[in-house]
Length: 333
Image 1: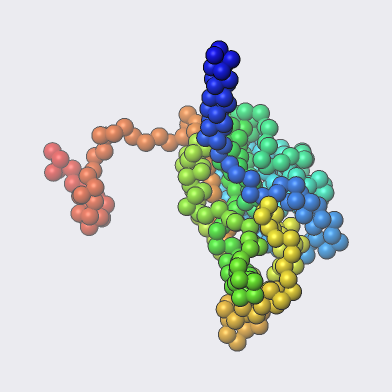
Image 2: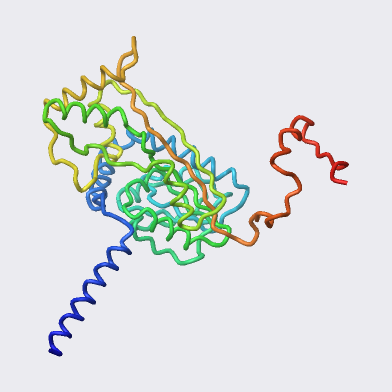
């Protein structure tokens, strides 16, 4: 009887541990990180790798401009997923004293360059396994890299821990509307030829989720905005070739191993028919870019006033605007 009770109690403990592990699991592995590393290595070793820098170069320039908007000198900064240095080539030594570049691809990391006088340190690190010391960085930046991270909430949390109080996190990601033309064309072609669809385009984060993820990680004073870059290509095939050159080809675990020739031809015809502009050659491809800024809480940051300290009621806001923004102090007396 005692042995039976022991077995039952052991079985119960195992079941409870399994239930707890399922509850604590916050991420799901969607992307094959090793496949993405190999894709980046293959792209970096290509002789014409510089031909495919146009998109990431432009986004890196725009993101670096947001760093310059902060009138502060950062002593220690990190570029997460730097690729070929699309951000570091625009960061000035006057703004950042030391910049640490990290990426999973050693070849791309070696090709990354900085501006004259910029002190750089290069480390081969995975964005999913950042191990910077707590409260060691003043600035963390990342351009078009975090959309391949499986555990995005955990990544944001580790970045926040590595920042000093009042440190800032500035990054850009591809948004959910990126390559919607290519996605729908491939789906329609497969429905017609195969009777079903496969995930040929990797999923992207929606803009409505970025704010909640940053809040969940503990960032404050959030700023989030989007931009759309529409780039023209002769046909769908040149677009897909350029995506491969950028190392932005599909890396999801459930990606199909093969795409038939007839499906490709059908998708190209559908793309041309649905999205090509009249009287213009070629097809457009939309890239939605999400830019966001988050601050780690610090003692010197602006704080909201205590509840009940307001001097103006929202119901009187209309009349105040009509008076040119002037408060009627006599009414209060």
